[in-house]
Image (cartoon, rainbow, N blue to C red; front, side, top):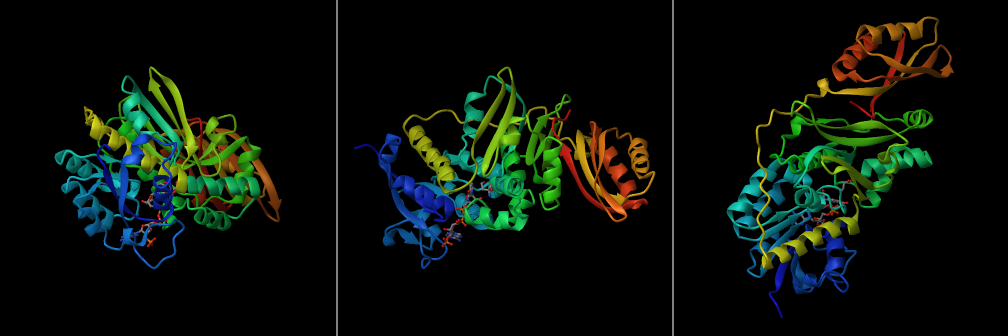
Length: 429
Ligand code: NAP
Ligand code: HSE
């Protein structure tokens, strides 16, 4: 019998339960799982009913006492939040324990410091599940792209918003009903505003970009973020009629001058683009790299089993390295010129607004766009009703700052009844 590896599991919710299910049913999986022992499981409330069976003497409300146990070698943090898991992970690393976490909110804020602490204590911190749930994307980027220069990583990295937008498109479900379904299926964060406001995707693209470009984690305020709350069923339908699906995309794109464009926002994706067909809680990331070209990662981005798959695979990889240590991947800031402000990006736009239905109105809006250097690809009047109608506009590529100044003049001017939506359109450039 080889060395036994003791695990402390912190959290027994959606992800933690999936982890227990895999650990309790090791047959047919990697052999190293059979040398893993669950030493204890920390939860917030011992009296809560559980969906998985865990021996009562393994459960505790004292996570700090659990990680101190000498037989614990690996701490799995799947409790969520920031302050408590930060303190716990710090303590675990100081104690010389390896850490596996799915917590992107924590890593995007304190990752750099925790990575340094892990290095100082010669232990590992692994976090494959933090980005795109069950899709192996971080480790392949670290280990299989070494010969490449990554130029972009663009993808759907939040399962909840993708689930909501898919249900709106396919079942005409109201936004609130679709969100409730995503919550009951275990996709959403404890506070689902993190999903629908784009914070979760912002944290994930921060982590993904740092690995793709071999840079320290960017500050979150360098990443432009827009959520889905302004998107109406009408926008989803018009987008379909125009040949697009609406998706929340996260962008990490290296510019010619070396700066990196990081942002998250709803985007009209042409139906012929593979990302337009990534539906439900699925995620996908398209990586462009030189010389390999385009590679797409696709799979389940959230939920119990898929996320636990990534967590337990990290545990197995630690077990493997304990037997055969390899050199850690070092993330360095080279001669890096900084991040591209959102005002400088160039993209097409979809605009929907309600305007007075009078002669000269289309010319009025066309002139404003023209004055700001915004060239229009199409403008269609929809849904005339009383003295008003909707205008659905697609522009050519335009600099974001020009579009913003045009929209300011439109919002302040005559003929506008209601400004509805402005959504960026792929492809850009
Ligand atoms: P969850 O269902 O809300 O589960 C959280 C678990 O942590 C619960 O078992 C809770 O205990 C426990 N917990 C909370 N505070 C605690 C404390 N102070 N001490 C000990 N235990 C505590 O959350 P989840 O969906 O599994 O997500 C966990 C983490 O994984 C989050 O960081 C999330 O962002 C990340 N993640 C989730 C998914 C997903 O699809 N759900 C995917 C990727 C990453 P009780 O059960 O007693 O309340
Ligand atoms: N709430 C997250 C999502 C979980 O919906 O993608 C996976 O990280």
